[in-house]
Image (cartoon, rainbow, N blue to C red):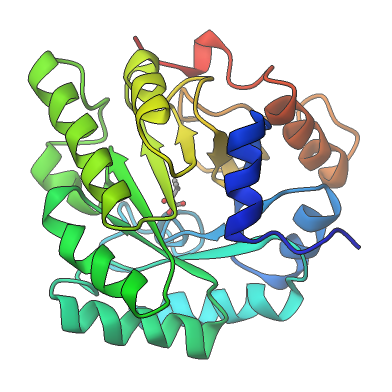
Length: 266
Ligand code: KIV
């Protein structure tokens, strides 16, 4: 069995320039396969709203949904660090965030919680970490704000937006966030953020220079209904079976062959 991955492990990987491999998981069986393939982090993402529940956004996902799926993952999980998404409007105030993050940890085995947003969640991040609940922040394309963003599109392309994201990342780092997901932003901006913060960054559509990569499991296996997101790759295409596809993903992240320029944005 692989040694258990902790926040300290992620920090060490960042310092040593070793890439972090992260994949979403929503159930026990896939969690076993992901850990056997050498994945460092499993994310119980609210993307389950899309890929499991068939919604067209993550907005309908509830705390009860997250607790159910995170508990399934936790029952099987042994080695990978387990991050669990806080669903839409479950952290609208600091006190609500404290209560709901504690539920994810106590009832569902979360080892770190993830929430979306920049400067407006800085106080929440500080309060959670001060209470012993590690936080993964999430900047760029934040799917819970899809209607405010006007759709699923690349963020941070103009200088003002890029500067704001960089500043948000620094504020979140100072507030104690232990990791940062960067979704759909230009590769050069992701590289600048990664170099400018102490926490590890985990990219999805954010280029090769992040400290790690994450993909939605169903995208990685090419079984997401509809169009494949540009930033993902179907690793099952060239593999004999699912375990081999997962191993190929981990290898490609670790050796820097994924993501390629075709999975990234300028
Ligand atoms: O919910 C999710 O799966 C995520 C990843 C896309 C980063 O937040």
